[in-house]
Image (cartoon, rainbow, N blue to C red; front, side):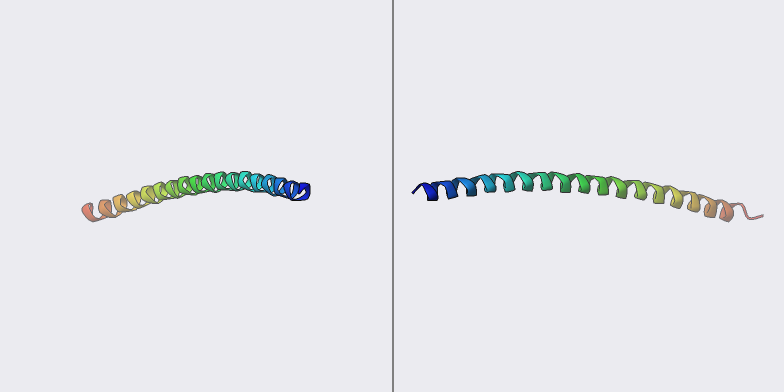
Length: 66
């Protein structure tokens, strides 16, 4: 009977450790997603600025033909 109780205790301990490691992995994945979203937003802002400059120069050429 002691052998079974010891085995159950060992399995419960392992289960607790796995739950902790799963929650740590989940935290890391969420942090990585946040970084990726921030990076996407930064690249989107740069692309928007470049597009605005290009449109400005195209419109400037169109309206100031001389």
